[in-house]
Image 1 (cartoon, rainbow, N blue to C red):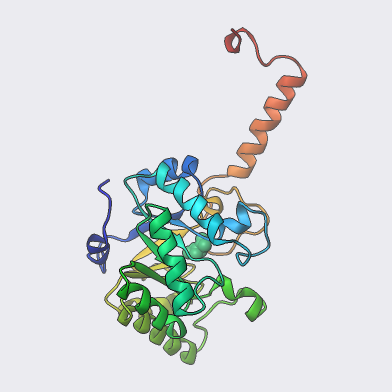
Image 2: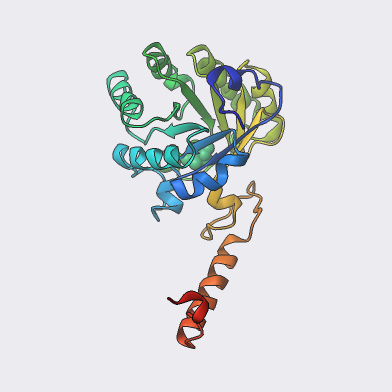
Length: 262
Ligand code: KIV
């Protein structure tokens, strides 16, 4: 698959849906890349990979480490690095931290959460040469402020506010945006309200693409499975069964037999 660019991503508006999937390391990036248009080094890695309750504690250095690993595993895939919570609170910090992504990794773009209230930051980053993907709707980085993960778009007021968010992020110069945890009919309206691709997660199919967290869709993350996640593999069971077989064979001395010995 030919590596996408900002230009070819923009051309996918109302075209073939974009396939985005998270990746956190080179090992999985290599496995996921053949079927993905875009790999997102999501700060969700702080949960499934880092074992934390939410995304808020991941650092810039940790994101850079994982982004470099993903880029090494998927050299021909468009890679987006999520900006951690607290690293884009104002124009100076946003630009300083976003520039670190370009200087210290070969990734193609960054992603920041927020709509109207973050549009000025998106504009500042775009004006300074960065490719920015927005993220509206349910914002995981607001989980503590909002007291949980709340589906958005349940009222006409919320729908209009989401449309305003999307249009502000588009006007600020973002090349795409992720819409998360939004009623499907509202997400469709949001997608129709802008000319940039809108990539959904828990937002129905009336958008321009889908993103899933790889450990969710492969059934590897057991603590919580959101309603919108389809598990394409029973990964946790397969891993545990394989390791149990290995442990049993070690204990019975049937591994290694002569096939696996020098
Ligand atoms: O961090 C992440 O994995 C994300 C996706 C949920 C879109 O932002």
